[in-house]
Image (cartoon, rainbow, N blue to C red; front, top):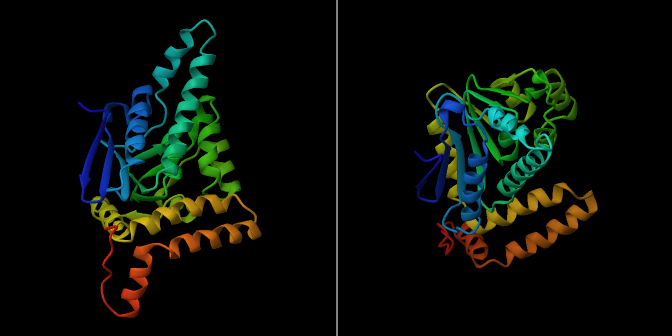
Length: 262
């Protein structure tokens, strides 16, 4: 049984974490499987949207705590193993954000700790009604410091700190209000709602979305003047694209564009 299932529908790639008995925990093998698919997708120009979901009753429950505890058996008490684990997980999360494709988290059940981190890392997120989100490691004495990085860059810092220090969960409605997710899908409608968004994004000019996603995250790290200077250069690059020229002409001439990058 594959630990990570990959399916494609046109320009959309669906990645399903497939360890339902472990609530799709981010074990060593799961992190490696996701990283391998990210590396392959990074050079796959036929895919425009990536959807990440979890099999069974949950999206992802975070790291595999039983596997982590086995890491303590080393002579150093697990220090080297833990450092390597968190570095590999961080690299996977950063690679996910760096993908040229738009990445949508399709969440249901629970998304906790590193699972919540993954939702926050994805470009967009849709959750089924009733989904719960938490960075609840503090409840067992492990502050969610690495999940905090993505979470605190998605929602207001006071809300992030509250979740991190209380270990309390946020339901889908609260997660949408805080900006952690984009939409809530009624029970039974999650697949259709995610597909609708994925197909809409996949219908846009791929080169423009790839340019825009990269610029979106880059400019967030700049001050206002530098961001405008940088994005002005990005606009120039975009305007010089053959398909952008065709798209503008098609709009003016009231016809469908004949894009090469379809």
